[in-house]
Length: 299
Image (tube, rainbow, N blue to C red; front, side):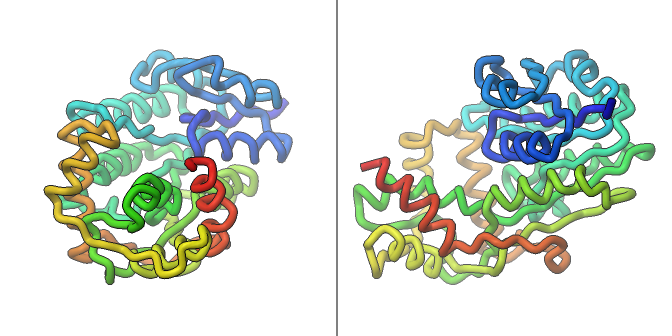
C-alpha cells in the first residue's frame, strides 16, 4: 500500500484543492486542519482526517509519520497580535516535525519576495520558513513562490458595491504578476503526482502575465457590468482605518500589509527568475467565473 501524502491547511482555499486533486489521482491523503467537522467533505472522498494545531509539534510529527510527502503552509491569522511571531512559531513547528518524521519530499507554499530579508511585511515570515526548510538536507523540498493572488481582489467587492471604485495603497501603474489559487494548487499537487523535483528548487508561479491595478480593475469592471470602473490609490492612513475597522486585522498585521504594499510600489517584491510553471488562468477568466459570481452573491 502506498504511503500517504499529508496536506496541511486542508480546509483552506489552496490546501483543500491540493487534497482533492491528489484524491482524484488515486493518492492516499491525510488532511490536517484545526476542525474535524471542516475536514468532513475531504474525509467523505477518502482522505484520512487529522484535526489539530500546526503549532503542536508532537501532533504534527504523528501526522507526518510514515508519509512519503507533505504540503505545508502557514495559514493566515489576521487577528494575530504579533504576526511575525505567529508565523515563526508555526514555521518552526512544521520544520521540526518534518525533520523528526523524516518526510522525504516537501512542497511548501511561500511567496514572491521571499528571498528578501526586509521590507516585505508578511512575506518575511515566509523568508524565515524557507530558511528553516533549507536545513532539511535529507529531504527534497520545493518552495513555491506564487505571485499576487487573484483571490485577493475579492476583498474589493464591498468597496466597489458601496463606493463604485476599487482602490488600495498600491500604485495604479505598478505591473504585478497575478495568479489564481486554482493554478497554485494544481502545480503543488502535480509535483507529488509526477515526482519531478529534487534537491531544494524554488518554483515561481506567476500567472499568465503582469497587470497593473488599473488594468486589473478595468477587467473586473467589465465582468460585473461596470465598464470604466476606476482604481484609486489610497493613502496609508485611509487604508489603515479601513483594514482595522472593516477587515478585523490587528494593528500589527495592518502595518505588515502596508509594508508589503510599499514593497510593491518600490518594485522590490519581484521574482528573481522567469516563470517556472505555466499557469493558465487569466484574470479575464477569473473575473467572469469567480469574481462576478462573488459580486452577485454579495448583493
